Length: 240
Image (cartoon, rainbow, N blue to C red; front, side, top):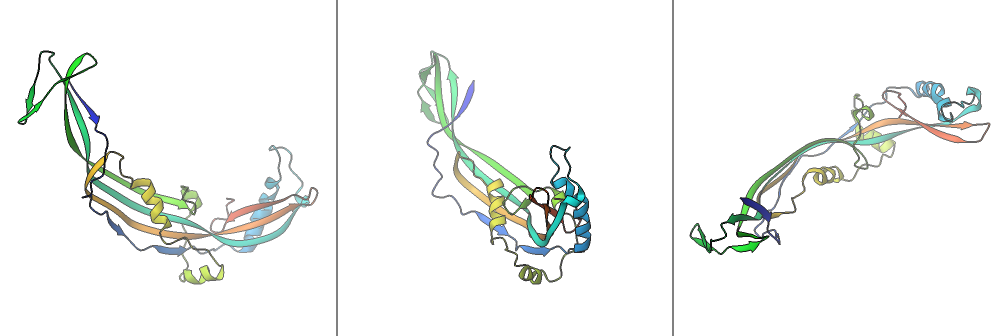
């Protein structure tokens, strides 16, 4: 019977090669907002009572809900795909049970002296195992790195001059490599038992930041003085 256990301590070799990286340039896309603010106002009027409905039963009258303001802004989403490849060795120890009468074992011209463990006679053979780790990811993330659903990012034509919209609305762009770091944290993690690396490759094959329009509507319940915000998608006019 043979048993494999990890040898300790595990130390990454000084000969570990530098990770190879191939990262494409990031594209910036700004969706066009084809829905007129008036249409957004109408959609908001249809939904405004839901903002102040309590327990699904107590709904205020429509005339009690007053429109206060409408603001347009852009919500960033990251669309990115990447790959990770790791060819590595890990240290291990093979444990062989031998007959109780055995006093010496010769393997590959090396002598091993059996020892007693849990009432059994064993020999331990130290070695290394070579493994391959591969990982891929296609992610749609919000600005905080949390996964977003496709519903939050509908298809739409893009602005021909995105930099103009970014400047006009003072859109705060995402940091240069924040998207790459999100993917790196997801897929490019070395196993803890690595002893030495033969090859390590991290690739980003596609990366875009899409700024999609949103409309923020503020309503007030004039009877209670309570104010609430409604956000509607600038492409579909759906409530977010």
